[in-house]
Image (tube, rainbow over all chains, first blue to last red; front, side):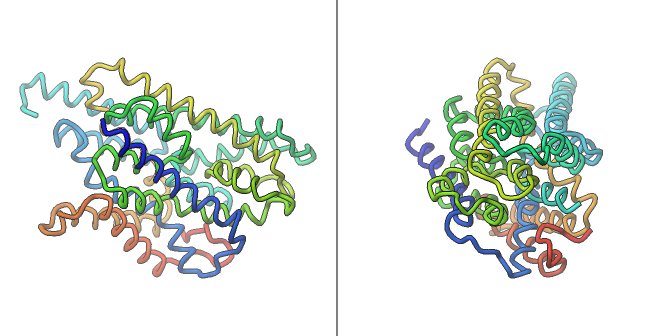
Length: 109
Length: 276
């Protein structure tokens, strides 16, 4: 484990998380007027999470089939507004079951 | 509605809240019960108002702790990340990049892009705090601006003071750190087959955050579809797939959000109100 590198990365994360919080409250104290920038900022978080999830989720488990099963589970559960932890653990559970079944059937993973 | 949406938008990344529309509404309702208008905004009231947020954070940070140690980080680093970052999506993404050996600049830009929304909250909050708030207080308290703390603070009648805000931040901060520790420590006791299945947990959580609002708002659906589509292109098209994941996320997010901001600008009077 490369501790200096990890700790530097953590410090960087802490700094770039703190900056947008502290600047307006302590320094700028001004409103953003530009409508395009306001709209852009409102959409950014959705875009970031979507880009991080697909297609990465398909490679997050032992094999593609269990990942697809987990993805479908997450989509259905979240569509019906289940909580965060429920959706996360629900997809984990389905991945676990799928992989167990595939193993029992002798499918290579 | 406006507050609900604000909670929701601001939550998106902030896995800290449960992020679904319903949860946000429910959450707001629970908090407003605590907000008796005539009660003075004391430190103790802040601590008390922070309890519902603290409980919500416990489960989310528990999952973060599991994810971090599952990826190979020691427990104390997971807790350190939570205690120095106090954010959800930003620290999830940053931690994922640390685990995959990302460059510093990728980690910095990705985390910053995700957390840039705090500028909106910090801006609003700067209009809401007492003018007498000192610079050291501003420097310290701005660390604790999260989606939920911001939402509860903005619900108070009139201007808010440093004592109240300190209390309101402390209880959730404790929950965020404690949940991370418990989740990180628990992972070691899980059998290997379960731990392999845990890899999908973080993505399941992201889906739980983006799907409910995308199902209700066409612009959000548009953003999500464009960003996900671009991300797939960068993964599967030769040459493009040599770019590292941090940059891909940034490029996809900027293009998708830019297009959406151009096609579906938010209402002039309320920056967080996205057209349905």
